[in-house]
Length: 250
Image (cartoon, rainbow, N blue to C red; front, side, top):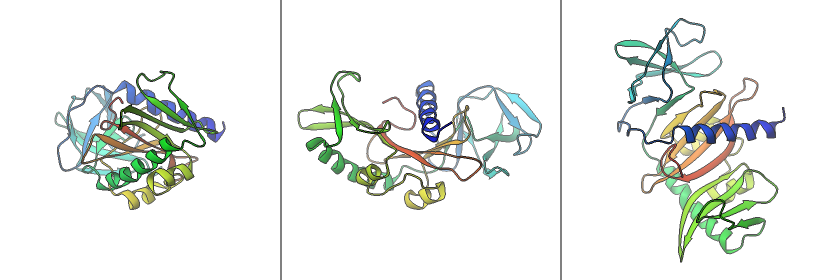
């Protein structure tokens, strides 16, 4: 399977999974690490090991404190939790982990994004403009020559509302965000952007890792999607930005 096809499937998994959990979830506590299990029932393991014993339990629709997290021999995360008096370990996939506060680093990036978006709308060279109504009321700009270069906005007079943007192109990422994140490892991303607001892996593919940085001053979220290949450290495959908080429909 080609890397491009794998990337396409990764995008599809992320979009479909996010859509499936788009209903509003409760706000997490303001401090500490907390897990929201997005599918129930789930396996609660005795140890941070997929081969250990487990209990299958129903999970309440609330945030669960995560006092500690560890990585196994394959570098996958496990979260220690106590659910209805039973303590055990949850694997990373299928869990939304609240990690840190809203991100000032993402707010700084968004200011650069606004300037780049204005330049694009003034002179959309290399981008095709679609006003056919595929997304009602939105103007869509698509980067020629790539499946993963798209900007969607709502224009109302001089006012522009950002709806969605994504790219897998290093040059476009540099232009819009003031830094190239494509191909970076997670430690490198964390060094540049700090602690994410949330992280998650879809139930269907634990090799996909999604870091979200929610802006503190507006309802916008920066999303970093990484994928592991052949047991190596995951790297950033594409970067997106959307209105709303983590996993909300846009």
